[in-house]
Amino acid sequence: MNQEPRQDPTLAAECVVPSMPPLHGVPPGLEYLTQVDQILIHQKRYSWLQSNSQYEILNTMGQRVYFAKEQREWCGPRLDIRITDNTEVTVVHLLLPTECCSADMELEVYSPPLGTLIGYVAKNWEAFKSTFYILNPAKETVLKMVGPGWRSGFSDVNFKVKTPDEAHLVGQITRTWRGLQKEMFSTNDHYSIQFPFDLDVKIKALLMAACLFIDYLYYDERRRNNN
Image (cartoon, rainbow, N blue to C red; front, top):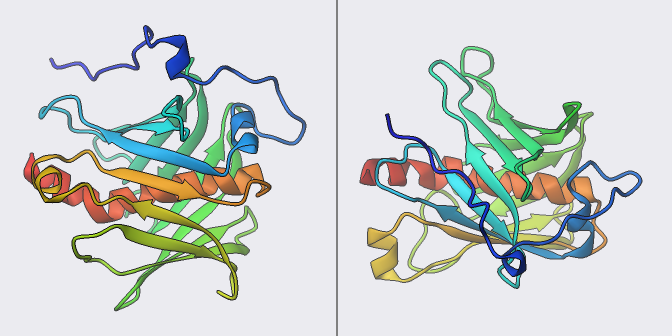
């Protein structure tokens, strides 16, 4: 049986961010997000036999902040990803229920260890553009994300993060174009997430979840076909 690769516990100290003390009002493990306005997400494939998606979540200096790993179960959720810190403690849990439970493309985002609901990322199907809604636990729209649609050319793909009325640009999620050769022969996609420094840390976590949701909806099928 092939075992899935684990996070490397021997990573040099300078390659990871140190743990931070708890902050009032901040979900456990998300304290570091209070200090940044940009996060990078690199999809990692360790072998062609790897069937689940894994990601390194980095700061702009290349230090690892979190690690995300997709869980796969027969007849399980359509998407189940756990984001862990550098001690392998789960800090965010992403869950997209099975189609038999719900046909909606509404990602649920939780904060362990108590399983507190942070909010939702909802996909709205439109003909010529892709739209996502960042929702709070009461399912009220906090932010709106607008992308270019299902297909894009040989360039970066931007999902603009806006206020619900689209009057103001708040941030952006970008899938980085890595060049024709890498796009054809490598499945390790790269993303960057930009948001205001003072944005609520829970919303930052939802944008991080939205980026992984985008990767699942848009690019995961291509990776599996390549395998």
